[in-house]
Figure 1 (cartoon, rainbow, N blue to C red):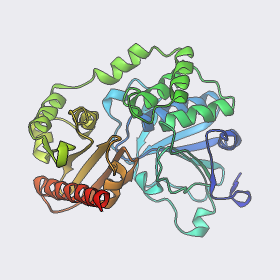
Figure 2: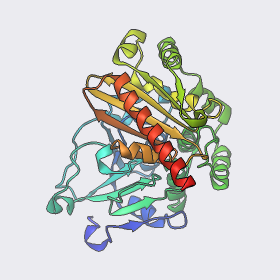
Figure 3: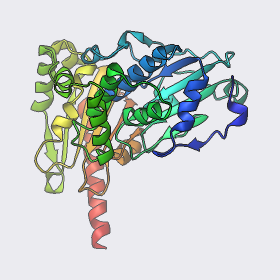
Length: 354
């Protein structure tokens, strides 16, 4: 059942209007779920929750990711074994399939091959559930709210609107995504509604102590060694010391015997430095590609999202990132970021005194 001919391709959802997304999920019997590269707790939690809800409702559900495998820390999530690494999986000749993108601000963040040709695009139906402010609204149904704490918070509302049974497994997956994307309910994206949903998930059987232990107590010795290298390189700079920066080289990962997933949480650790308002963490896990994570907090005139977009990336104003193909060594690229931040801060100060 291809719904495209009857849909406005730019229907944008909000927190009071999740029923259209739930209706699409109910109507389709086959779902293909997509999450973004370098999947985090929110992407994985939302996928596992939706897969479980779909299977419990008799749906045929598949899940595809550009990553080789999910971070080991999330192995406790229900149906995590459904995770399938794939670079290009679109079947444009099957109008019975609903393509569901979770936590993807644009189609390019996920499995490659999303059709740009209008004729091919017209053959598929896409549901886009996300909470990034810079979402490009690439779906046929766009359930997108940049003020929501997480995609898992969005999905909770969708499932509730569609009267899907939110059992303990689903609740644990949703709680995981909300907990990780709010920094343990400490980020400014955490609202009263977020806490209310977390409470409802606990009422569904979530043991918050057990889940948070599984998320937080997972680091390997290699991961600790990796973090120690990043900590040893931390540089604080800018007027009033509001910036912090560090990096990890390809050799660091190799010598520590750690994977890229073991940097999760390190950016937030750097944000705990007294007085720091914006940080950049650079890492290189393959030659020629540098991944940069930016984090910021209120009290600065420009946020992580703006800085990331300047380097070709994107994300939230307080949490963003970019992957850059460059021949620069990591210290050289770090120097470029440092110069940009200092110049940007100087510009803001001059603007205020003008």
